[in-house]
Amino acid sequence: MRADEVQTSSVVTQWLQSAGHAAFSAYCITAAFTTYFCMYAFRKPFTAGEFSDVVLWGIGYKTILVASQVMGYTLSKFIGIKVISEMPPNRRAMAIIGLILFAEFALLLFAIVPPPFNSLMLFVNGLPLGMVFGLVLSFLEGRRMTEMLSAGLCASFIVSSGVVKSVGRALIVDYGISEYWMPFLTGLIFFIPLLLGVTMLRQIPRPSGADMEERNERTPMSRIDRSMLLRRHAWGLSGLITVYILLTVIRSIRDDFAVELWQGLGYQGTPAVYANSELAVVIGVLIANGVVSKVRDNRAAFLTSLVSVAAGFVLVLSVIWAQQRGHLSAFTFMVLIGLGTYVPYVMFHTTIFERLLAVFRDRGNLGFLMYLADATGYLGYVLVMVIKNFTAMEFDVLPLYMHLSLWIAALSSIITLVLLAYYFRAIVQPRTVQGNALSTQGDT
Image (cartoon, rainbow, N blue to C red; front, side):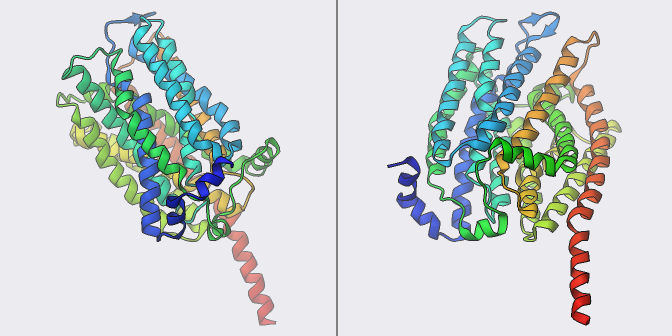
């Protein structure tokens, strides 16, 4: 008996097939949130350290560690373009567990191998982790409630990053754990909850007939399928992915160098601030995505999501303007600029690509589009890290982040407005012309 047949016969799966929308959504969100929340304990805890005892080539060791892991994570995203888009449903759960165990073993080596050679272990750590998101997302896509379910998944990587940093700092400050052993121990703490989350994911049934009718069936993609999708949407995807690359850069700097940003803002409080600020951000992100998820018409929802992206960039510009004039506290600044960054970022994960597939009814899946965007997005971040590391100029994190956010938000706002005009002509005007033609025929 195949693994997917065992899943279909489980009591939990049968209950979910007949459960109401609220119960089904609560279960799926809990499963996805738990799994990806715990994944961050294997990816981000090292960023809670400062690693100020090591300098290599005149570069701070933490910067090297971040760059090393991001390069592994970026390569993982490129691998995932093929692997995730082709992955059969019955292999997803075991793949997640295998990837996590591989990443945890790399963290053990990071603790054992002395610096600077242990920086290579974070490259190895990033290699499997980049594919976990696509595997989790595959359980949720192609449903009438996908936006709501995906928003719950995305809430995990906003909140978990702050929580994991708080746990990591607590292990260092309160328990005297070495910065090099802290990431491995943090992963151990979250491993059992991760297994629970993956077990819950395995019970989620496939999309129903009504789901496939409204959102299009999501199938594994061959190389030919991927090529056809890219050719058809070349112009639109180029603009969308450009915006996503720019978003990934400022989102990743805020995430990876949160400790330095808070210090640059003059904050000297407790480690809990990392979790508290991200909790405030996630509430705003969930509200924004909840509003868009209520729009049933795929065309209207897609265009509304682009408006939300533009609004996020306007918020970033406003926050930087206010901060430069001393109008905001450190906490308010981090929350508001996080909100302006994460609303657009999460909108790509929950709505933009999901509704794009639903509008145009292409053969494909969300994993392919997300990994195409993620791979290029993290590649852009790697290039920024390389420039930062190997120029003669010295960069403080806060001024670098402020300047990049300013220019990226301004440029991305312009690109998003162009995309709105492009897609309005592509999906709204043809429908209007068709409706007018039918009306004219009726009059005759």
